[in-house]
Image (cartoon, rainbow, N blue to C red; front, side, top):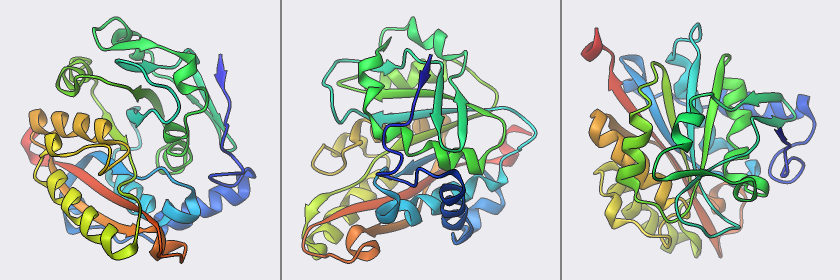
Length: 269
């Protein structure tokens, strides 16, 4: 079963050539942090708005994947909030392929193992109109070559338990992507202060200090922070901007951050 793109032409270009050019531009314009030279990027928090608004910020995150070994297959766990449906647990799709203008991406076979756990179930409805997974796919399709995804739309779920279920898969080459914007529709200066506090909580691993008022993807963020705590990943802020910076109107803005999680290469040699 194929889950076709539903926000192509709205959140990002529907034409493959234009889409690839835009995404490549966002990634190529990024400034890689010093940590990227000596450690493995294992996770990202990246925004999921329309590319005109958040594409440059997302590009700063996805540029950090340049250091991953492209000769091996990567399993990308995408953690997304639910914007349309309320439910308990974490929802995998019924589809086994996600389609964008850049091509098809397979759902990992490892997703079947998660589906039998206490937190995870399958729901076509949860994924049908959800953009928070879809907008990450063109970036992954440009940044990685050989990969599959475990797309999870999160409802009301115990994030520590879900983190343990994901870690129990014990897959050799895994990237975790938490899809989230930050504050919504505050005036520019208020948003800057609000988001600065939210980012500080994330960098300190204080997921329990976050709510839906701080980030629409606070549940995905709590989950990646729980994984990072177990795996001893270190978080670094890559970029912060809001829609007042990228789209001009500063009267009511949405905040966007890219935050990377790194593992020391030498710890596992």
